[in-house]
Length: 346
Image (cartoon, rainbow, N blue to C red; front, side):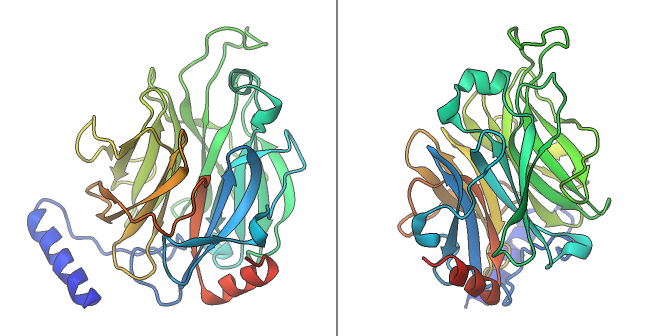
């Protein structure tokens, strides 16, 4: 029945969008898929918990994309030892290219807000990205803090990454604001916050950063990218000025032309941040999106059967834990889930 409903939905979408070319989707280069995949049977999530800036692991209950349980008895799996000794906004990244299925990375923001203020963290905050790596999703090693911006940057926040098959490298994205070179103490007025990008093959050496999104005077933070196949992508962004999350779509690559489904004022939700997107393991073309209600009880799940069209609706939150903050979710195999839960039991 699910298969038949998926076919009906596909036919309906095709008939109602005559100007949209039908594309053959191939996600093999990304370690992600929009198609139901019987080899993927669980979901592994990494998050931080508000005033607890460490990396917490959560594993799905069976193959339910929005039912999670805490691992390691609810205590952190990763506690940072470098920089501010606090990590926020962890993102788990599947290896691409030759590293596909062999390597994973967790990256995050170097920020322990308990040791600073929000103003200071944006003026003279960390200019580095936390990195951990693993060959089995169980053991996370080689902690490092890699500086990616020069001294004119006030901070580096919420790093994310996506495998760019065209360049055979990871495109890393983050948010920064900048001060005049003459303002060495960053006491003056900064630029608007914009999204920056650099490429890396190993999360050790990065290319020179450059602007990726500059919507000045609007402040943009918290980017997340979902590959759609055939060089198409969806990206999710927080308008820090308006405190909303919206999405854009490109069918011409990461550096192609982006449009906002529903128009320039369309949003997914207000009063949220930290978008985290991932495909469903069982339902063709279905995606999930977590949005962090930062002023309330953390992540709420949303879902879409039409990502490119930007149509999202709230999911049942009954089995989703409260107070999870900005993180990410990775579909995994049963063997991977078993190994992780054996090392870090619930």
